[in-house]
Image (cartoon, rainbow, N blue to C red; front, side):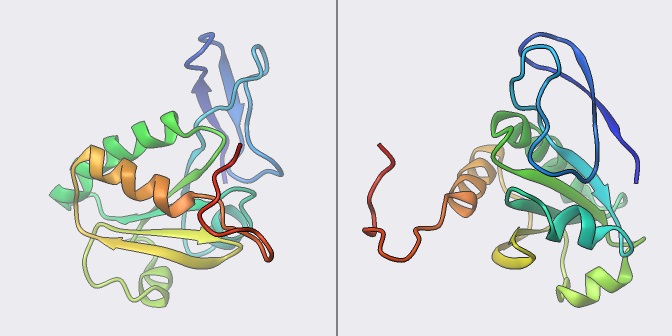
Length: 155
């Protein structure tokens, strides 16, 4: 696993963001949340995605896949817009056959949302950026706990 260098979209400072960490990455200068976009494979997936402190949006893709290349920048933009609320985990299925088999991936791109290591949402195929953002926002929306009124907003 390697750290990524991310430029803060608020103050421009460059920050080292680890692939796996407790909490969520924040800028060392202005303390704003940073986008968390990392690569994972068969060996690192559990630590990077399943143990993530925020919902992990998993992009199962391949470099030769045209629709995957179209979805990738849109997902990166969603990760930037929703910094601190999600972690984007990119998995190249050509290099991760065990994950491809585990999640029954037959078409790519396949997007999963994991909470506590469990798949809570799945989408197969490319979609426009606006549709991807809506899907991700819905999929990572906080889950109401026991005794919470359903449909109540946070206020």
